[in-house]
Length: 353
Image (tube, rainbow, N blue to C red; front, side, top):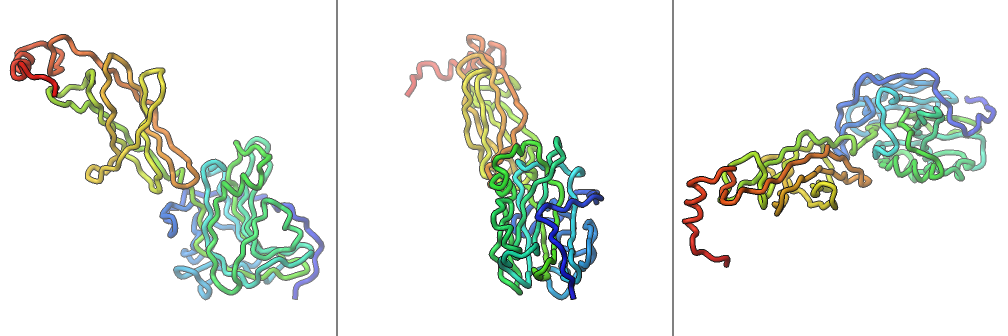
């Protein structure tokens, strides 16, 4: 039987000793198809590998959402939790577009009334690298009613004694919780999954298939190439000539792309953009820029937008020069020769349609 305990307050309890990640997880998330930042979030190792445990927690094979194991956060002692630290091994900011996905099997749900201070929750904690202060968001399904007025506490309407899916935009939740704070230097720190008994039992629970996803970070521009299209009567050349279109190709890895834009301009003038198309044969994103009517330098880059939160990834800035042809150099080979005379003779007397 549990003993009555004094109020510990609502402040976040900071774990003093860090458990650093050795490498990024390679598991792919089932709902979004992206690699999870959390390691062993499905507990399929059959252990708490990569997690720290406090109090009475166990890897369980009896109540499982998917696979063979889940994590059981018991009610055997006052405070039971598992924790995984992410920073500083990985530096992911609030603005990286973070999402949390997971499954919870609670035994009790709802607000517990004005009692001090029981709760069961998942907490995602960030650290300000400048001030070393902590802030975060809490996802709870069973807690004391004193927490209802806190914007960083997000109450989840879950069903007791069944598996419930949680899907949260952590970046959006951080901005709604801390809208008067500067989040520019705030990094993902750790994840706590906590049962705390005080006066009232908030209920033991199980968790499974936990993921922190970063769709923005999963997108990468592997390479970009471009080449003159060499329309008739031009011959092949590495030089881009007046009125010659240029084909741009981008090799992009990662998924959940909303759109890929090719942005270009004459040097120091106004930017234009056009949407690139995916070429399934080449497995590349492609688009053609129209030819230019005069000597100039063209600047361009590729920008990719994710379907999650409108985040984008930009390539480096590239340039190429457009060269005017010598009078009589019809085929653009930088030489006025018999080929140009033959081309002119073949079209002698023709008029534009």
